[in-house]
Image (cartoon, rainbow, N blue to C red):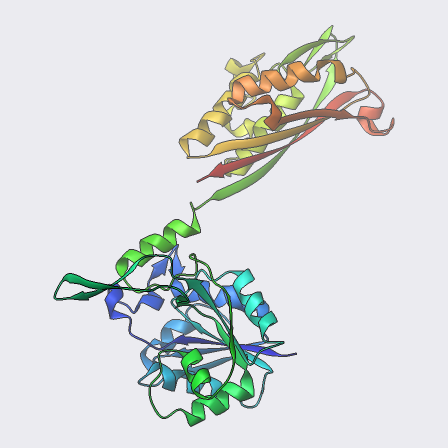
Amino acid sequence: MSIAAIIVAAGRGTRAGGDLPKQWQDLRGEPVIAHTFRALRPFVDNIVVVLHPNDQARWATLGLAADHMVSGGATRDASVRAGLAALENAAPDYVLIHDAARPLVSAAIITDVIAALAHHEGAAPAVPVTDALWTGTEGFVSGTQDRAGLYRAQTPQGFHYGAIVKAHAQMQESALDDVAVARAAGLDVAIVAGEERNLKITTADDFARANSMLGPEMDVRCGNGYDVHRFGEGDHVWLCGVKVPHGRSLQGHSDADVGMHAVTDAIYGALGMGDIGQHFPPSDPQWKGAASQIFLRHAVGLAAENGFQISNVDCTLVCEYPKVGPHQPAMKAALAEIMGLDADRISVKATTSERLGFTGREEGIAALATATLVKS
């Protein structure tokens, strides 16, 4: 079963305003037509993009691989026929005809249209009319219209390829859409459920609606940190902000809190801002013996200054001793307080290295951490 799509994009779209046709205007950093193309691409074997001759150079700058690019005609009907002709050699079983100005079409609509074509010559999405309908004369309400059985048509409108080619060839007058062409030729067209989200951008206000439907732009960052400190003389270790009794202490320029250092570096990493050593050089005597929460608070502050919220942190301590389990709740609470997070967004866990390597020989402790940052 082969499926093709035709994206009709040759119109000028002047009602949307702006210096460019609406399909070339910006929507979240790229032209509307780019969103439309990416929505359809996973579901079809061939895509034909029907463009105005003046827009072909613009298409080339997008880096999107259409299977065919053809010039449109003076009317939508003529543009669709040009797209259908481009598919003559491929002769797909089904063809989906879609407006370039509907960039938010969902996977569910596309797959529902395709599925309906297994039993019908045509299928198209539509939304039932729910508002009251009036007739009007000279600015005044002149009557009402029964809305029962009325739908707002959407695209993609899908058809058996050979049937819609023949229907267009027979059509002698202009049609509102391809469903009208199909029905004029006697084809049955099934209605599948459309969505309010599948709006057609027509006016400037529709761009605001489309942006709103896309939801907030999110910047999600993930960083990792790794740190090691060796054991030396002492009677405790600092791990994730908790003083843990032990027969030896971890050695370092600061308090050598290996877990907190790894978490701090994970946050710096997600921000693309280096590591602890860059912000707090060990060559600087002012940081000798410093509490590691100073470093972590600095990283958390940088995240906030750059508009990021820390979503969650996961830290793994690698050691034979001391046992971390009894102190885990206190460690989570200490990190949560410093980062301003709920404790359930923080994981602190421990593992051994099965007596292998420097941690297995109890020469030191290693820590790995991952931090996720989100900006919306």
